[in-house]
Length: 113
Image 1 (tube, rainbow, N blue to C red):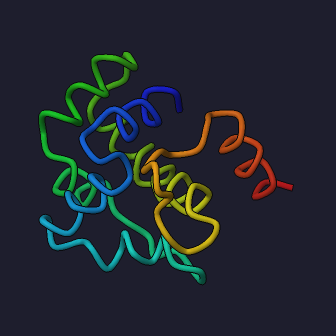
Image 2 (image 1 turned 90 degrees about the vertical axis):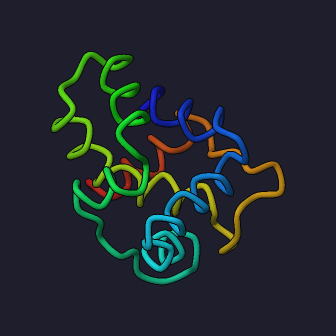
């Protein structure tokens, strides 16, 4: 989780930059479903790879010590929740930053109750 939040927040534009990557990869509608209120659309590991690009995925894998496939599998489950919980008002925050790790983890824990 820390590596994912760092990747989002440290890239140019934060969440807005991530949205742009998804838009450029033809996956803007999926990303927008996470931002907007309502149901979040699922994303496959291959789609995450397309949106983020090989360099970003490889960097996350190296920093986390996980295999590339494990990273893509994790991101396909985590990214929709991180973006959704970081945009409770249905829009990207003015500062573009994803919410802190504890805030996201607390939000995610409610899914498993």
